[in-house]
Structure formats: C-alpha cells, structure tokens
Image 1: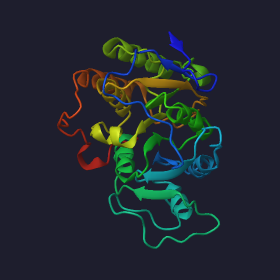
Image 2: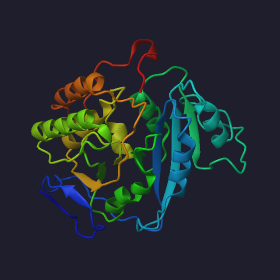
Image 3: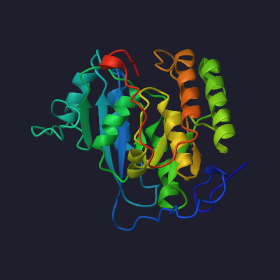
Length: 304
C-alpha cells in the first residue's frame, strides 16, 4: 500500500516501508539559505535534444517547492560523435573541462550561454554510469538528481521530487513512471516491472519503479556509495545501497514520454547485469570497500 505523506502536494505518495531507522535524521526544511541542487546530465549523441533539455532545466518553475533553490547543471559528454560537443561548448561558453580539471578559466558569457552549466568531456566512451560518476565528483550541491538528455523525463517534474525534501518528510526521493507498456515499450516495461518486483522481494521494499532515472539524493550519501557499475545496472546498485543504508525511499508520480527511436537501454543486454547487481549488493553495508572495478577495458565499448 502507498499513502500520501502529510503536508506534501496532492499526488505525492511513498513506499510504506516503516519508520526511518533510529539514528537516521530526517531533513529539516531549509531556512533562508537556498537548497543547492546539482543536476547531473550524462550525454551521448543527443544533438537533437540536449540544448532543449538544458534550457528546460534552467527555466523550470521552482516557486512550488516552498523554499529557495539554487541550481547547478553538470553535463558530462561521454565522447559523443555527433554535434553534441559543439552544442555543449556553445552553451558552456568555453571548451569542455577534462574530468577533475575544474571550471574552465576562459569561459565567456554570451546571450546563448547558460551560467549555471558546467561541461565535462570524456576522452573515450565509458558508459552512462561512468558519466554520472564523473558528474558526481564535480557536484557542489547539497542534493543531486540525474537528468537524461533526451525527452523521456520532463524537468518540470523535478520540483515534485524536491517538495518532500523541503517539507522535511524525505531524504531520498524517486520519480515513479507509469510502466504500462505505452509507446510500444512492452518488453522494456515488463523488464522494469520484473526488476522492481525482485527489488521488493530481496530488499523488503514496496517500490513502483526502481529503474527510474529520477533519483534525488543527498550528494554526500551518493558519494559514500562508491558506485561501481558503469551502465544501467547503476540504478539497482543505487537502490540497493540506499535501502541497505537504512534510508526510506519516497516515490512521487512523474510524467514519462517513452523514446520512440535510438533507445540506448536494451532489455536483453542490460537486464541480466541489473539482476546481478540486485543480488550482488544484497549484503552490502555502509563503509564496505568497493569490489574490483567493473570498468570496461579501454573504456571504449560501453555505449551508455
């Protein structure tokens, strides 16, 4: 059963997993200091959508959140081979940074630049998970959320995820999609539902959508997970570690527009690694040292 969290907007509900374990503090509503949110945008060959997504993120209505919010956008170009790098450099006002290099010193503001945007570029393609890890290392916000660079997830939904945090009723928030097979996605939606069901079975949760891209977490919490997965198996890794850390996952409903072509996620290629991640991290504990790296040799074959 799912129920609304008292004091949150209508339509907000959470997976009823019991009270927060002892010693895990609830977030208090921010005061006059803005809540800084880092939006992590992994990008690979998204020349038709990336500029629109960046501008949608910066123009979303944050007045409904209930507290001041400061945004930071970190786009990691995972060695795109189309026009994506040129678009991001134009929006950034300077060439992209190398991982770990810090903000570009020669950035020039123009009417087209997005001041809150940083752009980092991988020299070789390493996969979506690796791009998220690079962005996470550069994030300076209190919270982070992942935003895909296509049109499947609408940035206008991000304030819905922020509301329970500001209200002090949640620490970790997921945006839950309607997994109804719409848009001809029966196989992928079935796989997502199956993986969510297995998550609930293994971890004792009551989630609707474990595989969602929209996951809002404290930056320090996500960094403490020392993420290892490099592709879409990062989603179950994050979920497993959130639950094993003793945090409750709040879910809010979001809109979703399935991609009609060029989908990078493959039910056949990515389903088994996701299942393996669920099993592998079932005994994980906070402070556990990372296992042997699963990075793709040479970093050039994982298209994420």
